[in-house]
Length: 437
Image 1 (tube, helix red, strand yellow):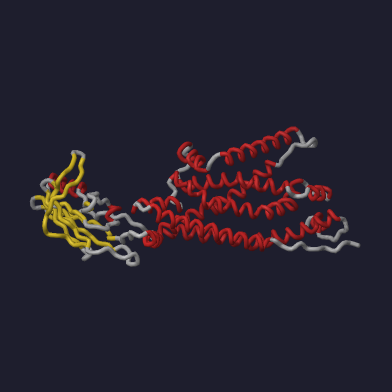
Image 2 (cartoon, rainbow, N blue to C red):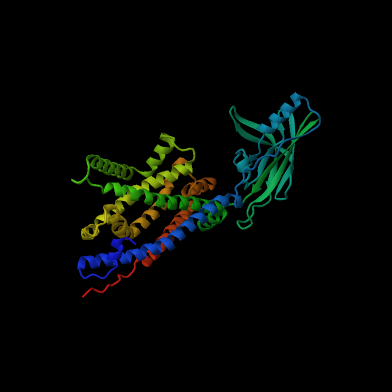
């Protein structure tokens, strides 16, 4: 144990040394508990969240429907095969109501009847359904679709959706098998789709539908948001320790010329860094690093970088204010005992400053949870961006954004409650030491 710590733990009668002794004993206990308990919990939380985020896509998937490989029956010539493949590539089912073409993704979100083309130029098509939930009529009817040349009338079979499943039944998959006939050659192609529940017309029903139907997307967004905000706050805190150390450097008469110059440069760099990142919005910073400089190939990594450097600027100012609020007499007492500036900051000032800053740092974490929503501008599917995608599926904005507002409220309230519990555990009672009298 260093000599100055042995000295600090001894009972003394001088008031300022006694106060220093009390603080040293109190915050030594606090830091030991913080290192042994909270650090382990934070690491375990990060590991669990990272593992869940890595494994999550393997459990809950949102697959895109893709047609199976073509099966050719017969011995076609190159020309016949080309005609059949062209027809199979260009042909697509349609929504019977809004006449919208059903791409692979839309075919996985069927809620109403479909129109299945019966002919493409000289190629004739027949259809079969693998599930009773979709039945195909035998009659051929006319169907008007939009084309670059204007309205176009085609002949189609109508595929009837017998019923839509309830929200608790989930999506009901089906397969449509199209047989393309040209001369004596056939080409068979299978389309995979799903009939999905329909959002109720009433508001409360729509809210419940949105929360249950898209729970997987909301959970994925929550994991991304928490991962970015928590990791960014931790990294930002580490950077802030460096920044505040540079920020507080002041040249003295005893410093050599090069040492004084380095202190000025370090302090100036810290001031400039804090001014820039506190004075510009996070959405501008994200766009600057992602679209402007193009430094990152991964949007998630860019988002983590932006949250970290932005948080570092704010926490550095929080720590600076906390350090400056500590009685200068403690620094003078430590220096009189032979401690260097670094030792004084490490063993006397920083433990108290960090403890006093815990509420503000926790508040910065809560702010980061909400501010990560701006990272949707660079394509990160955090909670807000996932909600925007959900709202665009049904064109029901209010229900989707009400659900995400509740999720944000639950997240911030829960984390605030946890941080308050941590603060109470760290709020240790002052140990009264007897004087030497």
